[in-house]
Image 1 (spheres, rainbow, N blue to C red):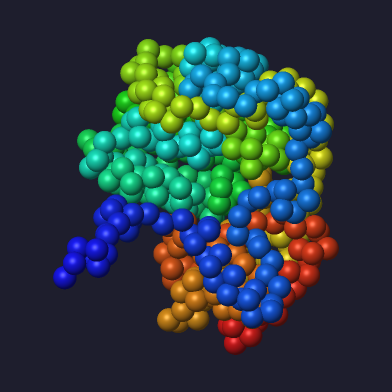
Image 2: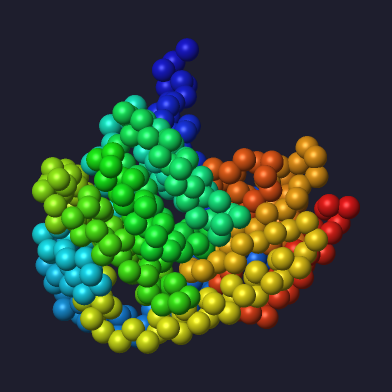
Length: 402
């Protein structure tokens, strides 16, 4: 046989890479092709539901383009952007210097750079269950192992601290904390946050804290985890994507605590960042404007999400066979359906999509057992549309569980 006819295999590691939030869209496209309208409640993309970044951020980017800011910038990011991020953290009680800040292509790149800098193949990283699946996808690529610590829906999706302690082994390299949480919408009280820091410090572990929803706590902005322990080995990840409604700009950052314990990690992250040249230059000009400018739009966004969360919780809890923990932040809920014997969460989600055109993500895409019946819902749609959607979910579920 000619070598020209031999299929070229993909790398073995890709077989372990999964991202259910987007993978399920292929089925939605088939449903759309059949003529049915699909309501996409699978991805946290506020602009798709009419939300937009504040005009002064847009103007900052437009002005940068007009000024010819179309070339590469330093791989760590524009100094003005890094200074604004450092100032933001410092003003919230966690003193950070600009040389410990790196501007990234969204929080997603911050996750990948930090895990790559920290974790070798064969090592373990503690991640919450349920987990935002990018963490496990990156760990699969690194040939490292996610070790899940449980968060408990009966306590508002708070971490099981005793179980977390038991999960730590000599192979453990880091602890991931997502607060406010995606996919559950939980926000952790101060006592729990202090306990997580204490656990990591006892075992000499760095904490990767995903704080991208920190401005979307319904009771107001959530303080950085580092503000509770400025000397702890904490790396914070955030962006303009959620609190400033600019996910498509791919403009995020990571900030590393001012402790010499993390100096080698900072160097490794910067070395990796050099290899990708830089994150988008023009949108970095929006960072100082966002963090130092008018933020009244965030209160409007928090109020809108609080209203949608209340509708989501009350209407889902009213459906026989469905339970739902009330979210405290962001725009996600993770309800549970009492599945019939032999059915999986994916069976339910696909049947819901085909019958109603409503697309959510099955809980097993976030690491949950397929038989538990969890799903993640993004509730960014307008209140009246949400009421219509949950009415359809209720009718479908009644038939499905009959």
